[in-house]
Image (cartoon, rainbow, N blue to C red; front, side, top):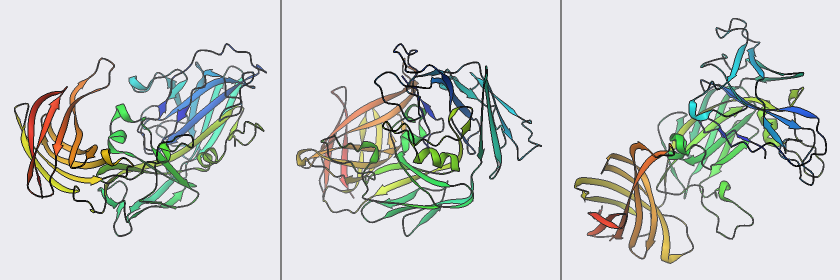
Length: 420
């Protein structure tokens, strides 16, 4: 089983999947080679490279994968890995920076992953970095030119923000998102759209996202675009919207080098075994670079249904006085009996200040949703511990209604909801 690195531009730490057991099936050829997957990021303090030992062939009867010959691979341990900034001989990090195994964050350590010291090597726009991997008789080299920008900008057509900056309000019904960069060095512009909580919370950083790229300095995404991550030709489910009103999203802009551009636009064809653009000598894979920054999007929409709008909810839950302002929007759906909605929710909840969004469904005028809040603890599996409150009841376009709050099916409070 091959292990892949997901170079998602919005992640603070790039996700690595698990490693499978060493191959037991026969391969057509057993000539080994070194596989390198590495993208250094000027916006991150610590760099890392994934190394594997693979075979010049495929498992019998199995098509090759993304990188030719990489259908069978195991972690490459005990290698000597260095990165040098040939454009900066006076680099305070030294003439060459050694990357070490087990030198990264404790929860990110994986066999075959090599980590740099913090803030090393120095990476300025236009600097040339040289990679050297030595393992036994294998010697792999690669080179990348660090990209950079004078500015990154997001616009909704009428307003714009420099990235990173204040949240940009975006109307999914009328706006088009425009991402632009003023480049110093680089080749390809990328934008990634994901849930804000998935971008900000370590436990969720590997969650799915939609990514777009352009060979240029500007890229547009219309507000009514569908979610590429959940698009499946074989799926009978309807397409999902990328921008749902009533939600906080995170937009990450990145500008990358020629090597990363080559990796984006090439792949290994199962029919010909060709098409992957290799930029390494002595091995296979890629060594590229990018710089990235993230900005929040507050997605709104046109109000054209009586159930949409702003509601003030107050009450007592588990003996705690709570107050949340809801800004509610309907989302697209095909089942009128369970029409989805999203709503910004800001105020005070049981465990403290709340500033997020909730999702749920409408059946007629009655809604059902969940409010989720971190407890500050962790689960036995080491993940963030969350508490869930179920909220149900009717909403009225005029006057006030009562919503019921339950935990594990037991009523723990009520809310009075008043349309503003």
